[in-house]
Length: 614
Figure 1 (cartoon, rainbow, N blue to C red):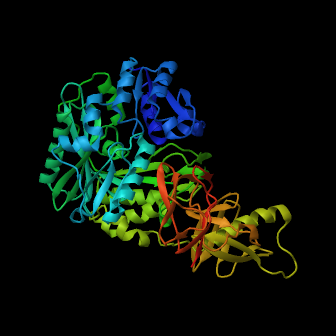
Figure 2 (tube, rainbow, N blue to C red):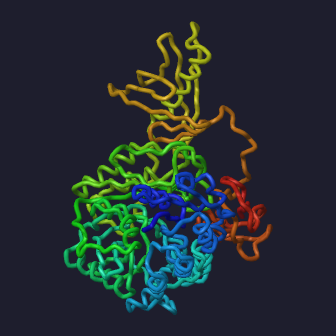
Figure 3 (cartoon, rainbow, N blue to C red):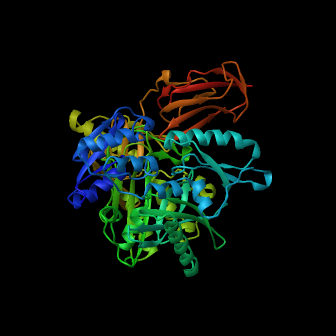
């Protein structure tokens, strides 16, 4: 029997596997990079082994170091999680060669399916080798790995070579394998997948369907089980194809077969030979623990002839530290608090006080709701996210709530083009107009306690300025014999952590949390502004500032100061959180400064280049 498991991964999935191991009485071992030395997964494990360095290529992609760590820590099994080396056949072999149990499919099955090009060949589908105008649009895709990395939609033939280069670089950085291929791009199809589970005795379960159509940058945002609106015939066909794919490679363990569904037809995409990020919705619907079943299968146990019955509906939303209104730019900084209401499953690799860095994926957590019906599950998850306490960098929380309540989603008519059509409306600022006043009154109540309250003399109103949703807001309030006052509302209560205001006869409570200049008022994030702006923060017109912390990994060929550039021309590429972000010229003109050279690490807001308009 397995007594000790090393998880060859980090963050949320490592913590999730550790949780099942603890419940099973199994000792846990973590590995961590230097950037993750104080990460939650390293703190909660029974033992942890350092992988020197920060970049994935030096740490979580070093199979040799991870195997040595497992042996040194006395682990007798390795769980790969998802991403990194989870679909690397050589790593699976190295684990087995070291005398350890591999909690995953056989290396031969990984080789057959982990490369998307070979998987398509196995299913009788040939990738495009020569792309013509008639083939457009096409999708450039990494042969290894997933999560939207190394993936590009190409709509113009002239862009193909550049997108191939970018996809290869991104795939090599994320997965250690730069192989990419090209396939037709199915416009506005639904992304539907089937969870499979197979033992070593020939039993294969098809555990229902999942819909993962809401995606940004080809990475899933909201997933649910079962996929809504499928006919019984199409569902049966998807199950049959998934089982056929598993049996074709003598599959063992948990895996997922993915499809695009358009006009009632299923198009095979790939088979992921690992646990998926969205596996909790299947667990909720079937009442199972997939990680526990992975452990049992690795120990040689036999699955029942038939899987358990599905009950109800489950929806999962991925909470990212990113700004959807600003090109999905990843965000970094201190996560002060993360809490959701009771009754919601929260899988996370962070807790209050943890830092969100630049080296890895910006996903903070997955929130999952289960209910008897789809409508109830969707409503429950949207309400929980709306009430969640998420204090720290900007997140996609508001986008998730609005997406879950969008008519196209609630009616089950969504597809992969959902955010292409609706992103602008879903990210339209809708700040709470009373939030700045509540923040100012909370701050004033603290200062009044320290320095005294009202004065027995007329005085000018106090003024505070806040940045909210990209705009500046000024609020005014005063001190009287009875307490704090503000025009247009009645101040029912004002304390450092809670303010109650009455407007038009309705009382509204505001929970206040302040961290330096950042203030969270209920779910609204504010920044307290100084009375007098700092002139040193101003930049020359045409300045390009880093939208996130990262590393300059590429500079356009031949680009030097004095070069003439065209509006929209790529100038340099930042790598942050395993994704490449292209920085383009805002106008046609002359490049007058290029302080960000190749290999330079920059902070958010750092000057990258200056383009002087013609």
